[in-house]
Length: 197
Image (cartoon, rainbow, N blue to C red; front, side):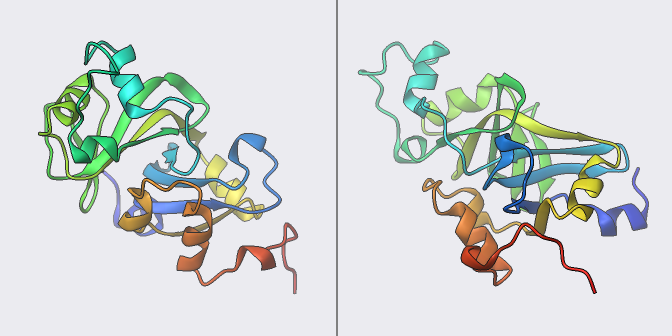
């Protein structure tokens, strides 16, 4: 169980927005949604970098539907983006979604947001009985104890509370600028240099 001080410093339910000087090319211009953050480390998903695979193609590849040409996804299913969630376990899928869907494997992440890492949610979405909003992530981003805090201190990331309209938006390209907009930051004025007094 987390202490009250852990809860106030936790970045769960926040966005990490990569600064221009980001050293790791896998995270350049990335927006990461943080699902877990404690003194033991952190886990999140890159939500603004797409995969070349569509959601319909993914369902076909996983044998959830017979043929991509025959798939008749309901409206919600057509809006599910497939993102490059991060460099860890890239072959594993996770669905971040609104909390109006629940299964035995669903975990509450933050108010209004849940995570389901199993095929049951993909089947539900394909049948039109899944969550009202969802985003699929292949892989995740992970940090060991103190690693994320060190990257933030080194001017690698900006942080802000997550905005659900950005998180679940099917238009991935604009998420970076929109996330910076939460902080009132224009990407054109960002610098990779840390300020010193």
